[in-house]
Length: 170
Image 1 (tube, rainbow, N blue to C red):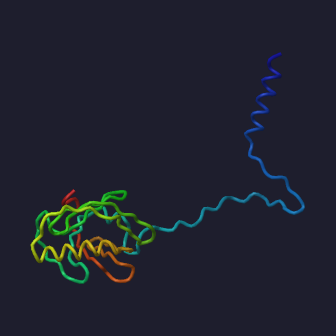
Image 2: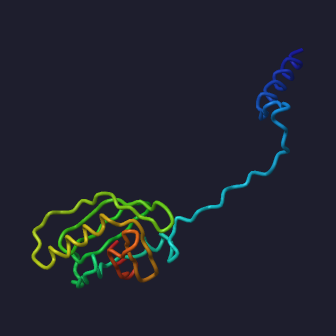
Image 3: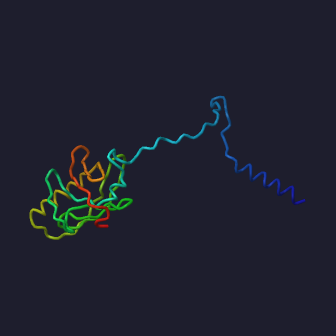
């Protein structure tokens, strides 16, 4: 006796779980189901390589705002380290820096305002630090290979880096 109400309840539940379609009218012709087509994926990587290359190296600054930067070889040497998914740290040549970045599209990058320590820097390190930090504030695109990283303001290169051995400072 309980079997009929249970079967009726199960049938109602199954019917309620079925996807519904709007009724076809003269104004809306029915179209047979077609397989869902996923939109073509737009890669968020530049032609020179993927973001995984950003994370693989310690990037030592070699040029900022068109001016060469001399390597000091110490911990304060101007460099950047990128950490997935969007954190970075490094040094300006005198002070340490930290912050976040965003990969916003194919070869596009945007830095958040970066925080730096405030130690007094002797010249020429102070001028190089200013050029470097200002350059980071203008970055819109990047290009990375296994051994080089270029940060650009959209058209011009504002900073160039060379790759240090992987995990050199991580």
